[in-house]
Length: 270
Image (cartoon, rainbow, N blue to C red; front, side):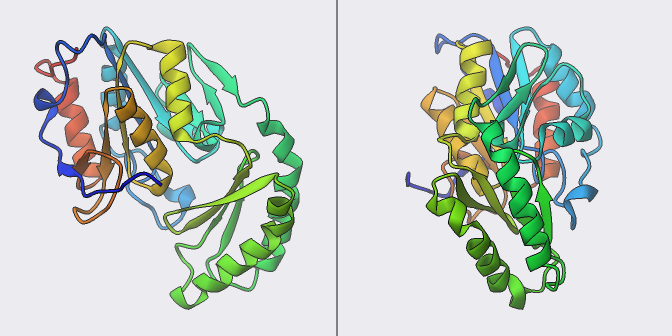
């Protein structure tokens, strides 16, 4: 596991964007929940924060700028919730990507569809008696949400998910990851948001300065990938958080403010 540290407060774009690093343009990728949207009690209640659609569209129109969303949600779900044409959208942590310049589905992802359908049915039945627990089958991945579940039931939710997934994990066809108030089952594929960022950059903007903004453990690989390529990551959350990202914004509202600064006429895009 790479070292996690407390990030530096975001100082503003003028201090961070390069002028002479040999890079051309910017690649800006962002998470949705907790970054472009405030965290909602239920996943289906999350909406894009006011002003973000116009800002994303404006940034994507800038010469040399490529803007995209990388979410754990399904591709159709995140594309519908953001609703900005012309962006590159990645769903299921980048297992599926669609935009005006890139269409991609991981070649081994489809093999998991039947497996996750069966696991979703099993978990629906097994978790039915636990208040607030909810199973979301996202076709290529599966998530168990427990944000509305009383704390005394959290360990039981984890045990049920582990028991249900154990045969698939033992067979090497699934793996468990965690997110905020959620447990995720993914195909046992060496793929994550960091790999998705690398793919998007290599296909669409190989010389661009990469920036990734996100708020969750599932964003850590993308922070690392952006920084390994000479760019940086921005974590969204409390100042005492440990992360691979070099910089931090307090909240989704602060992300909106930062995007407004970047979209302004004075923003120093390379």
